Image (cartoon, rainbow, N blue to C red; front, side, top):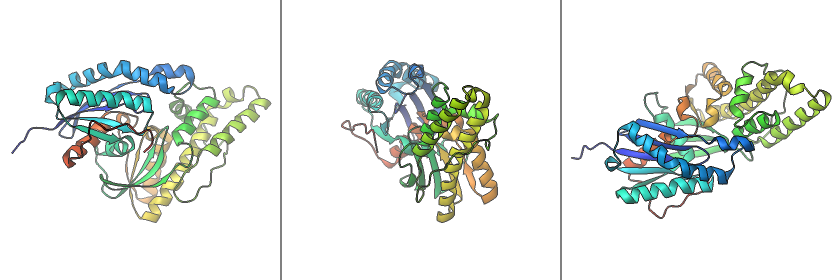
Length: 336
């Protein structure tokens, strides 16, 4: 019987973070992330600049991940990478590198769905993992979904945004307020010092468990424009309260549908994932609802909320155990 430990190198390049991680038998040995400050100049991610930065970062990031893990490349058993969804140019950099690396070492490939990896992040030790079935609210700059997770191979999207994602709503609100990119964390920072009930914003009405944030973004823009016409210094004088109010509205929209899904499915195991799961307002709302409704909640470590390769490694590890390998002909998919 072969008791050799399974060692996997994982790469994540779906957007503007170049990340690499090494996993051995379900334990993360390293998780390295290189950000891209160039996008601050443009107030958002520029796809072409992102792919160029990935090309510059990927070799040193992989090298750092292997060195921190104390793993030689010849000890690797498989190569995991993000196949989508994401920016096509960014995905191509990571996917091409992964395929070349795997080919050179003669090891198999593991193609990972980025959104599924956010959910699998809940199974990274040492935090307790949710029991099946559970609901996972996956919220990021590009995606907002409620997923019913019956097993790690049986995931069903029961609700999603019909237009813009919650994370994008945070970032666009920040841009309207003149805050630098990425603005979501800054909204959260100022919101903690403000009154969440100072300003009221209309919450979108969408059927089922689906979301919509485009109307809220427009309403917020009109509100700020109207107020600054009356008082040019309105934003500076009320920044904390504005941020607290828009954050409260977005979190309320997210929680309303999540509560609806939990009640109607009868599932009390609730998890959140994605970059917005780092938001303090969403975490506080989830914890409050767990007390009120008896939910068992699961919130990932901050390190595994935003885009990272550890979650790709963990998802790849389960694919390896299932023998779910990808071929050299696999291609990135911008939308899945």
